[in-house]
Every structure is written in C-alpha cells, then in structure tokens.
Image (cartoon, rainbow, N blue to C red; front, side):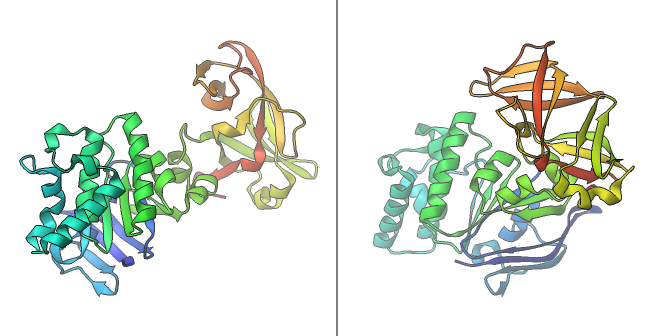
Length: 365
C-alpha cells in the first residue's frame, strides 16, 4: 500500500497544455476518482501516474519514491483499462496469472493468488474459459482480477465501465466498491460519469481544462460546490442556473429572478449576500429542491406557482420543467402531485439550499 502525491504537474502535447500545474495528495488506501468532461486532463493524469506518459514538469511520488524516471513495470502499480486488454488465446486463469508468471512466481503462489482473486470477484467457475466465452461484465472482472493478483501498491482504473450497458454498469459499480472494501489498496479511478464518481469515491477530484476545480467528499462537491463548473457538472439533472439580482427589502434581502418571481433571502444568509446588492449574479438550485408543497413549510422554504412546459414521468418521481425569464428550470415532484404540461402548478423552493455565483469570477459567493 502507498500514498500518491502529485506536485505541480504540467503536461504539454507540443504547445497544447493537457494538464496545467495540478497538486494532489492521495492517502494510503484511499479511493480517489478523477472526474470531468472529455479533454479535461483526467486520463492524462492517470497515465502519468502509471508512467505511460512523461510529465513535462513537476514531481510524482508513489510512497516516498520519486517515480518520474521509473519505468512503468517498476512502479508497483496495476492498471485496469477501458477495453479489458485480455489475451484471447489464453484462459481466464492464464490471463490473470500472466504477470506473475513473467516475474517467475512459484506455481503454488500463482495458484493461490488467482484463486483468491477469483473468489473475491465471484469468477471461480470461469477460470478455464477463454475471453470470447465471457460477457462484458465477466471480462471486466477478469481484468480486475489480473490487477488484484499482483498485490500492487496502487490500482489505476481508466474508465473501466464505459463499454458496458447501463444495467451492468450499475452492477459493476457495486462490485468495484465491494472489491475495494476487501482489497483496501490505494485506488485512482478515472471517469466522465459523475454518478460513478459520487457512488465510488472517498474523495472526488473535479477537473476542467487541465486544472483541478475542486477536491472533496461526494457530499462536499454536491452540496457545497466552489465554482460554477462544479455546480453545473455534478448532479443529474444538473443544477438550475438563472440570472438574478439581489435587492433590499426593508431590513431583509430578496433575490429577483424575473418580473414575476422574487424570493426572500433566508435570514441566515443575508450577511453573506449583503455586499452583492444590485449586482448581477447567477442563482443556483438543484431540481430536488424544487418540489410540490408538503405540509407546513419550514423557514427558508417558499411557495410559488408556474405553468408547466414539459412533464417527464420517471416512475418513482416526475420531472417538471417550466420557463423563468426565458430559462428552462427543472423540478422533481411526486408523480401523484404532477400536473399536465400547460397547466399551472404550485411548487416550493428550498432556499436554504440555494447558491449564488459571481459570473465575473465563476465562484460561489
């Protein structure tokens, strides 16, 4: 087991920056997920940790060892790729044991490690099969098993579930979480899927244009985003973002979204927002904080009415869409409470969960 540290890592492809001076400390046994859109630098960062890409500048440590000039085979890491990378002419046992055989491990040790990994992954009955006889999920388990048998200091996962269908992705997410709880090896996992990031990570590293936007627990990046990018990227459906203006209302404050929709600012946030009076800002509120009235509203939860534009039944919940000053807004309501498209509907907004973003700095205020 080992911690991983990145110090001011820069990666240039010709004159194009892929990673722009990131710093990251990953604790021993921690499960870190790098998440962001395509081109944000997450896979390049993973490949630099693996030694498959050379950092243009900066330092990479695995444990206490500076590994910038250490070949991939000597870094004591194991990588699970998106495309499985299994040898088609070898059995599952042979695929999983290949790295150990190259290193001249004893046959008894190889057998013990493969059988233990197969037990953890529930693929003991597949050891004699060839990859073409396996489903996508089974192949991914074999790829994970090949990494587990090496007992590395660090596991690296490069979008391992992106080739699987939606149902199998959910199943494999659970399997990966179970494996990490059993084999508590330091893990760095790359994905563009923020649901994967939220469900798997001890901490999430949100990346954008080669930089780290925010590092935090899933709860922190979801409920306390620091930037507009994080607020909009994490969550599905994404956070509603609308232009707004803070105004005084007697001794209190209001947030004006349109000519017909103004909300009172909760009293415990007035001091925080007072310096932004008459400033153009962005108002952010997640869909689950816009819902149907549910009994007596606590402080900070305010009622309002809209005419629904689109209604999407989702089974256990219904998504309702409406327009505020030309911007589409999404709410989550109980299916029994939803009205039809074109009809008026009473809703409530939980302003205790609101965010205000300064468009000049792109940061939450």
